[in-house]
Image (cartoon, rainbow, N blue to C red):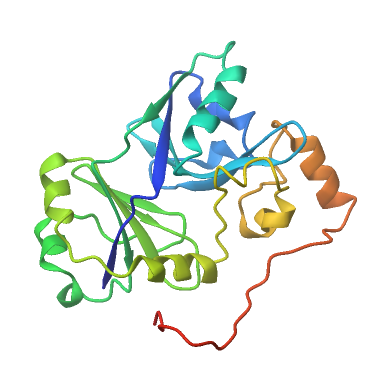
Length: 245
């Protein structure tokens, strides 16, 4: 098992009676599909259909947490706040879980670091996008060709134990993200690209069957009436350097 310290994220917490209904009118994914045992990748666009930020939405005790690339959460918070005036919703920047880890090649229990074995982790989710929970710990199955997970721990004591896990090279986590076709929008990239240019229309970040949301008209028109002139592709080349796997 490979364990990674995922400190490259920030969090926006969305709560209140209208939380999911409010987000449904703002983001590209179908928030009606979000549940305690299912997470959602999504994106927030501006009126011109450019991506402000991407996120992973996870429901924690009836509050929706948006996991966002570090440096972009404040902009997401400010953008959503402009539209939240008439909804019963509370938006706040949040520190997030006490510990967030990534896991690849979970394999058998014998391959687990002792710190993982000491904690009361829920069973590993079997399907991409599924979530299991136990004792304030969330196991999240991420998309991709190989099983890949995030562990969100809200319990301070268990988080301290997990933080002692031996960490693998973070470049290996980045490599796994690339192979899975995951593209995160940084603050420097914000509002520069349409979802199509980031392959979000193919990777499940955009749901074309849901109702309207900010920027939806532009995104839908480019999908149904135009053809993307540019796409992201995986390229492989040989060069001197350190192998990641």
